[in-house]
Picture 1 (cartoon, rainbow, N blue to C red):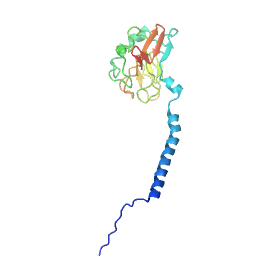
Picture 2 (picture 1 turned 135 degrees about the vertical axis):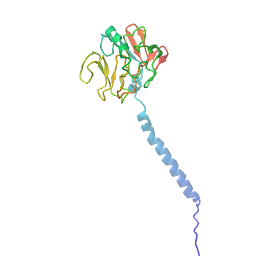
Picture 3 (picture 1 turned 60 degrees about the vertical axis):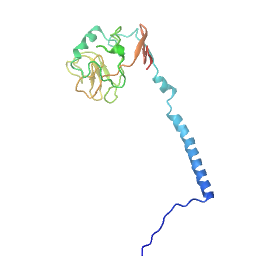
Picture 4 (picture 1 turned 180 degrees about the vertical axis):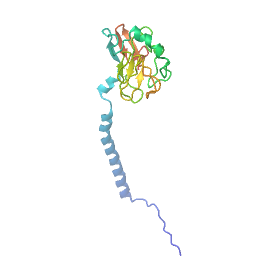
Length: 198
């Protein structure tokens, strides 16, 4: 003869039910009280929030070939020569920022100031900082016919004088061009343009 056992749910006694509800409520309140300091801890500091604010740069004393880059006429003439060598000459595939409409030209700059290049110094491969190697010609780690531009020392990605990545490099896209404007002929604001803050 086969025996079967029934397993069923038993309703807890009223005193035990009140104790379970009180314990669960106290535990929930304790979790909230414990989490509040952690949530506040993860809030960005005032300094961190300020890092995302527009940056004002006085470019009056900027000399050619300095980084904050003021490109010389020779440097500007070199840019179209690199079109066949770069992966995305017209910057149709942005990295993390859309290319501002006013920079959709061969120099990736404002038409009124083609010598002023504004790019984000973050390699589009793994986020290292590319170094300015503006002088053309042979240099350590660069080809002998180097036209001038930017070199990422982490994995060897190279960018031309307009921040466009050369073909067959680890970096998949051109350097980002942030929104920017001139508030005065010698004052550049990065992170803001006529449309407002980025």
